[in-house]
Length: 196
Length: 274
Image 1 (cartoon, chains in turn yellow, green):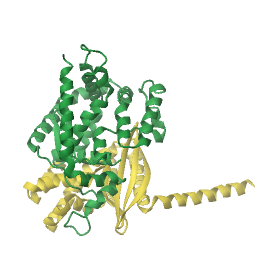
Image 2 (cartoon, rainbow over the protein chains, first blue to last red):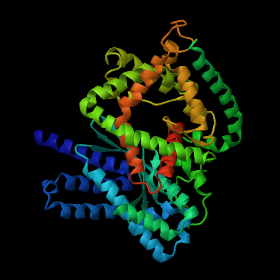
Image 3 (cartoon, rainbow over the protein chains, first blue to last red):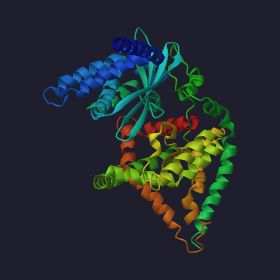
Image 4 (cartoon, rainbow over the protein chains, first blue to last red):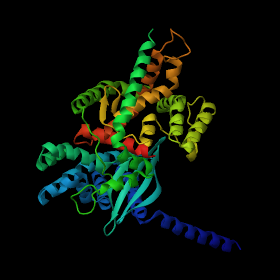
């Protein structure tokens, strides 16, 4: 009798689990898998030791590189200006801008201690795009962060919206302002300059 | 006699607000789209098609930029505020954060936010959002009693009673007023024409204005300056947090002035749409 009850509970659990993931959507699944991997890496004791730290940081960058589509993010951050860049300039821009984001946000991620990520909802944005609303909860603070993902043989993030402020849009305003008076090369130099 | 000055200021601001309403009229249509669409992301999509160039529409968040006719003034005061808060006040804020523990600081913020609940309540009503208004009222009742005069935000524990942030600028936005243009005020920081008018509305709905203000019950010799001292105290108490948010925008920025301007405009548009 008891075994039957356990099986019943288990089968219910399985049904609920599949139902929950179906509700969440494929973009949320991909995102949460990456976020979980990042959290696992950060909570690894090896991260606290200074000589294993660079190796852990490299692993972290690799995981982030898998979920973020840096080229798409860069293209959108330039907006229509992207087409005025030569392919070679585009490539250098993606590298420099990627480094800038890496440097800023790695420091931020690494300062996280016991923050929890809650997945609120997934919204279809049309043409293989989705927005996953999350909430980072920790130390009496709640930060709403939404990720915009695009499905191109796998879901990848192309924009992050923190408290209603889109990262891509914010950089597009800045780059647009700079490109009004300056050349693409000057912009790339400016971005690289922030990395040193 | 001293009370006459703030009264005049408010009169001037009220007159400005009338001017602003007519001035904003031309922009109403574009911003109405923003206000009526419930989802912030969905709100941005209709305009995305307007961005030409790249194959498939480059981004969701493409919208008409807010004009910046006062660029020189704004840039000057941006630099001034950056030096004042980011430089001069930073050590004081750091020292304050070191001496006064975080629970005390958030307690003071909670108490002040609880005290100015009429601003959020009235603006929720003015936006015909009765759910939000009742939520604000519930929060005020619970936090004023169980939360010991608002020091502890006990209501927050209920997800339906999460803190709100409605203000008069958002109310104007709800009724179709556009940003107008971007303006940076000395010490007060980034704003728009609409939100500047909103500040006057918020001052009118702030209980401090009525307790210490021109129409106060204190009569001629009421200590009107107390409302400024309390407001200034609240700003200073929040300074460690404010600087943290400010840094998170400015530090990764390639063009800090534009980064702050854009972040402010995006943040406010999102607030209006909610």
